[in-house]
Image 1 (cartoon, rainbow, N blue to C red):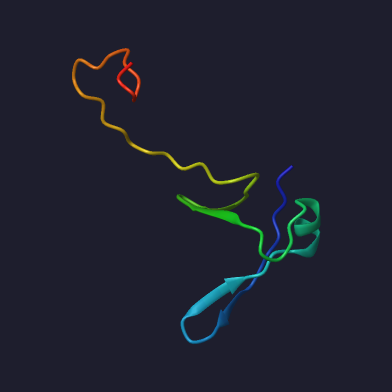
Image 2 (image 1 turned 180 degrees about the vertical axis):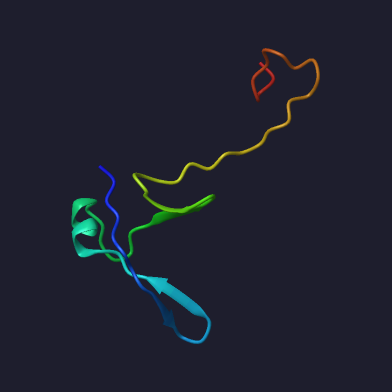
Length: 74
């Protein structure tokens, strides 16, 4: 179930801002200092707990006529 909790944006140093996360939220999601989360901005801003390593996609070009061939040409 979604939970809404008001947080305050605070200044850190001369040019950065931060928002702290509620302790109960951190415990529920088993997060500790140094863990990674994804911040997703679209129509609204969301924070997603990262479970495992971030997937990285690589674009590959396949030459014309190479259908059914593997990278080793076999």
